[in-house]
Length: 127
Image (cartoon, one colour):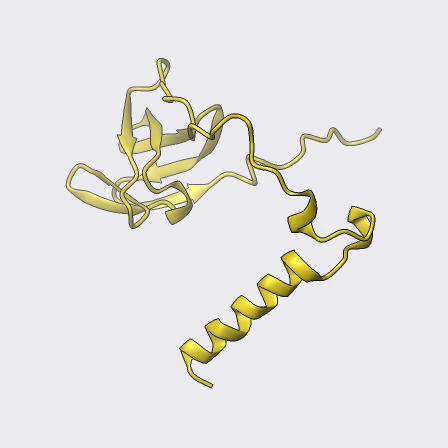
């Protein structure tokens, strides 16, 4: 099976799933029968500012930032987004996205050392 055949089978599945097949969670209706467009168009993320950071930087489409003529891989998930950078030690930079601290960049190593999941639940241990 080639790519075009795979795509045709997938398109047929998506059509059946959305238009023909009833879903118990939708009171035995198809998703197309209950779907409606949003009343307000999505405008994207607001402009992000980092007033408490030393600088901000744009993540490239390939998921990198360039600092001091060095390319550092961040994540393609953040491509096109601005990050805040704050120097916490000589050559060590804290990297933040919005209100989340993502990790530290060591310019000599050209790596991002991530902090444990900044988006995870904040749960205090039980005593």
